[in-house]
Amino acid sequence: MATQVNPPRGMRDFLPADKANRERVLGTIRSVYTQHGFDEIETPVMEESSRLHAGLGGDNEKLAFGVLKRALTVDDLHAASTPLELADLGLRFDLTVPLARFYATHQAELPTVFRAIQIAPVWRAERPQKGRYRQFVQCDIDIIGEKGIIAEIELITATTATLAALGIDGCSIRINDRRLLSSMLTVFGFPASEHASVLITIDKLDKLGTDGVITELRDRAYPAGPIDTLEAFFTRPQTMEFNPFGEKAIRKALPEGIDEAAVLSLVELGAALGDVSSLVFDPFLVRGMGYYTGTIFEVAHPSLGYSLGGGGRYDGMIGRFLGGDVPAVGFSLGFERIVDLVAPDALGGLDATALLYEEDVPAQLLVALKSELIASGVRVRLERKPRNLKPLLAQLAGSGFARVATVRADSTLSTLEFRELA
Image (cartoon, rainbow, N blue to C red):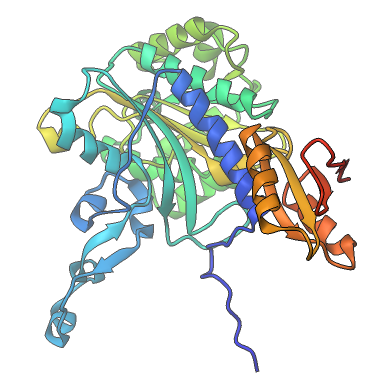
């Protein structure tokens, strides 16, 4: 009986046509990011386990793949109180923690304000499902060293330009500020020590709805008074749509006594962006990462129940390595979700032609014709002509080849007759 040889769960193989489409999309993303002044870097796929589990990655730390120490003994296995004690390295679960380490390592060699591109795979021990894999590609841009909102403006502008270049229409950018969330919980009566865990539940609002969030908070035995106040705020007699984005909409969405500096920061951001993108203020946008300190944002698409990407300001992370806060903000696109929205032929590609030849055609002639076509900017494949052409032509079309020509022993480039593949 044959053994199944599938890739590991949550990981995938890509056939040539899929791989070609992925590379076209990646090329477009890189090109737009570069046009907007960002520089690409590369970091190792592994980081020290202690760094990956330093409280910087939120719940994603629980999903990190560990790499066992070398030369472990049976005694080591018995002595370990947790599995983490057996690992000294781990696969990166995002690109932000490696970037923070990279900046701390190379700060002296980098500009005062550093604009970084990272496009690379990451790994999480997820429960595989549609749109969620254990190995996937993230496309990150980050600005380190700029404390003003110009950093957020550059990131949002570059991201919306990227989506436009990919032909993905109808997206909106949901925006909030972690300072507003903390301030709001204080106004509702939740003690500061409970803010992080309460936000984990509020982050489930899209999945559970307001009733589900309130039920979970009561089940977790938080004080009744703050929960009652939050429930009353959820059910107040006004819409939850706070647009157009602006000061009036933001203040309408928030209770009295909120963090004024965060409100004014969002107002300034919206005014500066203007019509660059479709901005939506979402007072309960949380973003799961515990390292966010200010503005946070997500890309929403009307046809999807999940975001296409997101990010925010994380001014406290790099300071853990350098001993002082360094302003930083980033925006990440989830490539696996993005690529599914891009039509395979939307970005074009090289003109691809297949040359079909029979046994009597000299190899020297085939090489010469192929070289001439390549020199003119055409992608070329040589294929021995079979008796039954139909399967081969279907395969070529599926691989992105637009034309074929039959080569005979006396053919020249000018005598080749090209025909289009459907």
